Image (tube, rainbow, N blue to C red; front, side, top):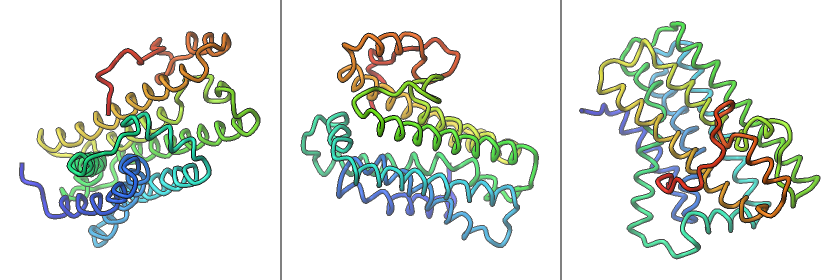
Length: 268
């Protein structure tokens, strides 16, 4: 498959922004992730400014909003919570020094995923048939819902931790699933994928779109597994926590999947 020039420009933007991970390798998948998506949304607005239908423009703006909100939230959380940064370091590489070659591999892989994630909107613009069909608006609406859902989950967790920092969170959206912020992410990227229907052309382009979607879904389940392991360590002896994890699904509402800890293939 031949990738167009603008695709490589998006990849270069993701590489540039996510390179902050060389300062702190956790940032490859946190700050670098959020701000890379925002940068890609902005770049697409610039590259296709001469022929930019409203629906596609809205999707690009939602990338910027999504990325800046997530990146900003993570930046504030890391600045305020040294324990969070230590937990992330330990979960990803057990606190060991990361060789430069491994860092480069993580950097390139993450940047490639971040580009694949936005390809549904990119191909809508690149193919020259970025008309405002129904699917772009359905996708945009789902994206908005995903951002709102994830933002509310983050806010509810912050409020709950302010009241009782030593207790697990089981209020608000956390009564539906144990990782509602990750669920919000998956909803957002489902909307992105839906927005490409009617514009993405051919098997090759759809493979790129679906690889990006499958990639981020895998990352969310991997994140849920890391969180479950940490919470089991912190709250495993609490009877209320034991009841909570046995009655509330970990990630998908109404799906009786209560644990992914034993699924070792979910390592990202």
